[in-house]
Length: 436
Image (cartoon, rainbow, N blue to C red):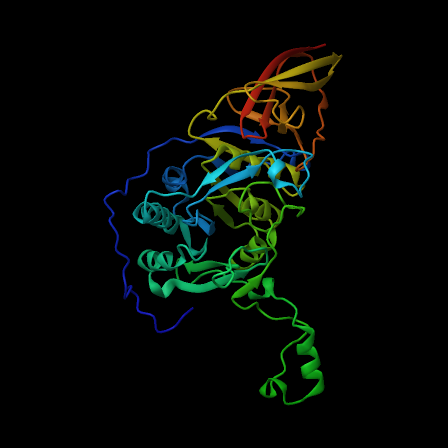
């Protein structure tokens, strides 16, 4: 923690706050519970939420105020751009002009005041949600990081500043009139001076030249020899490759962050079982890493495509435990209509997904238009309980289209299938089956 910093800001960011608005009052309701095959029998503990994050945080406040141990925030950067998501399958990654794309998210604002209104309101809510030992990692770049530092000083207090982390990366750049811009900034603030930080969990190996230096001279290190085998705590500049278009983690959602970056953050500033949140979850990197590292998580985004991408990613990895999908109401947008083929045989049924109807549902071809489909073998009530999931691999037309299930007793069951398409839309089909 930086020493000698006054408890109150010595500088303040001023802007016209007349356009700031209070969060909309919403009631979140569970749409489904998802039980990955490897986690059958466990109770859902994690939450994936569709909705405006300011309203969502307000709705979560009665239950989670002061109870979230780590928040990673990757908001729009004030870049003035509109970002497209890659949603096609089986396309040549070397020919981006031929890709099938959809709207990802918009980072265009009527002015700087509107952007600051957005950011200030959300950072204030995040501060309230953090536990006494919690930390916030705010990920931005040169467009807005300087403004955000002043906002965070105002909300958290300057003495709660922990680090300014520079994430370095490589890549092509068209800039010829200035130095190439190849880093992002991550501002780290803590709720109190009792924050969680695990240096041993993130140690990295010393450079081989350091080993050679200490082996060749007793004067190296001013007479102090570090524990070379133990490694060192990283500096505040980190190099991780970006998730390029051929990277195995690539989902196609724009501005996706690498899992290695989030892994270091979660290992450093949370413990197994802690609650981690990301209210700009995008492609779902934070919940995916949190699930793998044994943290509970809350993830939210306002874009249906972002939430469906996160959903598909979560059910694709073996470490995901049961979670609940929430929204303020019904899933937005046009409903699609899955077509099913049912083959009952005694107490066993076989269900096949044969098509997907709806405007534009076949633009990428069936089954390439399907991102993930799932089955509730015995629907009861409004909440769908997904007991079987078939996610399509990223950028692949291959998809498991058939599933079978054996019932323990005779009777009539309502079987429900839900499909997410590559544009973030959903379709639900129900069929009754009589078990002999």
